[in-house]
Image 1 (spheres, helix red, strand yellow):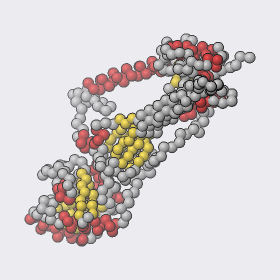
Image 2 (cartoon, one colour; image 1 turned 60 degrees about the horizontal axis):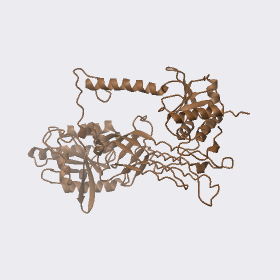
Image 3 (cartoon, helix red, strand yellow; image 1 turned 180 degrees about the vertical axis):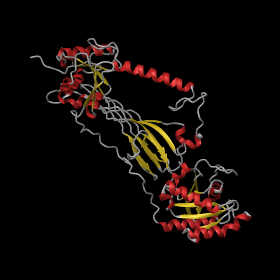
Image 4 (tube, one colour; image 1 turned 90 degrees about the horizontal axis):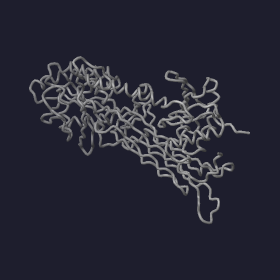
Length: 530
């Protein structure tokens, strides 16, 4: 009795012909070519008209000027990560003197490399990603004879500053971030490497003692990620523009921020480390731009600098406090010291007592108000000591996570529990009769099947049949010559289910690819039922 096999004749996208007839070119390839040509034409039109990053062309063929790259890339970045693919399994047999019936000897492929995000305390911005945004791990090596497993692919590390939050670029804002890295030594897995394919030694059984089959390595994962930085510091220096914040930072530490006598000189936050009385305090100079207020969220205290030469120093203080409350009420609740700056100017010193009385009425203790002069250094030491005392009174220095990030620190085991019968079938008849089969288990199986060997193709058909794919396709009315897509594999439906038809189609596919009937394995041929 002639055995029945699955009614699918397969072909990959790269094969230009269909074994036994059918479309002259793959359906998806035609669609892809058409889509690519349309995208390329639109992209060229947008570039000619001055549109960038998907923006529509503007009148006159010019694009609007955006923020400087220095500001745009300081605390936000987008990167591309791709893990390595697993190595292919090997088909080999032990042929050695005095070892009769050596049997299968092919080893498994090595796993692909992972991509990790690691905290680098020497970094304080995301500007390093202006020079490179692509991070790819190495692929695993294929297995070899003597049951040797291929080497694992090398991992890749993405070094980020403390306080970085990593999210999927197109994820819902309500979804938890991929990682939130705060401290030195924090590490999180971004994408895991693919599993190595099994060699023919893994397929040996009582029913098949001489398997001519191996798996391809699992493809690596890829993703576009968005990085957001919130600086980690002991104190954030805030105030109106030109209040002397950058000058104060330059006096407190060895930092050299840009200083000039016009507003908004500082465009990006600056960090500085102050060493006093054998203790260190990290200050963050926050520019007078609303978008940078988020950098105060991780700071333990606020140093509010008031410009003593301002016509209305009390109004300036109220405006900054209102901004902080509107941006995030938790910022306004942080411990605060006030630095009344520019005491070296005559008019400034005259108004200090008035401002001090107002601040006391607002609930600020008198010992937390310091008259200083950043230009001469007057009162700066007292300010730092007062801030240290406030930090000690405020409690623990332990940083707290502000999100429910996943923070995967160990490589999880591959989810082998994905059921093969858990799949969905959708129809797309816009450019011909096409059925698309989707499902985690079934797509991974199709991708890891090595069609260089007939046994691999036969196993592919058997698994699909047992999973109920053919039964579901028949219920949907699939016919001879219809296209069936599983993952990245495009197949053609055939009603002839005999072994001879199956082998004939596989042989035609192998001839089209320019390889031998058994790929790299030429022995033994007796396994094929010709």
